[in-house]
Amino acid sequence: MKIFAVGNSFYGDDGVGAAVLERIRESDAFPGAKLVDIHTDALSLIDELELNELNVVIDAADMGLDPGDAMGFRPSEVKMKIRSDHLSMHGFGLAEAFGLAVELGRMPRKVLIVGVQPERIEINQGLTESVAAAVPEVISIIKAEV
Image (cartoon, rainbow, N blue to C red):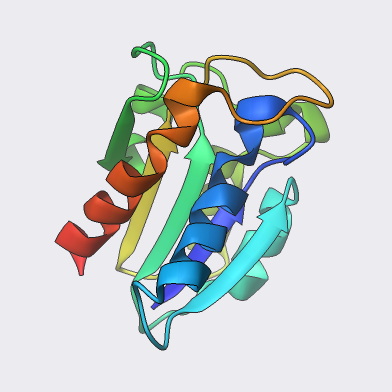
């Protein structure tokens, strides 16, 4: 299994993926799992995906939910679940990365995206209480998939 954090830890709740990876490391919740923080480089995700393993992608995502709500979904649902892909301001979002992975024959069959509804994405801010409280829920969503 490979677990990816997407986002920028210097932008408040956008750092939720990195916070989840840190908690997984501390608790050893998924022994043997490869943990990768790709920051805001969704394009690099294509090279990192493991074709024959479960790939989990954790990201702050505007899904129109209450702050801190977490949801697991599949790559085919990205455009339906995420209202605005914050990564697109960097030129390449998750939907585009998954689309390109399909075109290149690099899309694994087993991919779970766990989105967390952010409350605040502002520079030099840490996680809000609502999003920090979602970290154990994200881990539970991943455990249910495993």
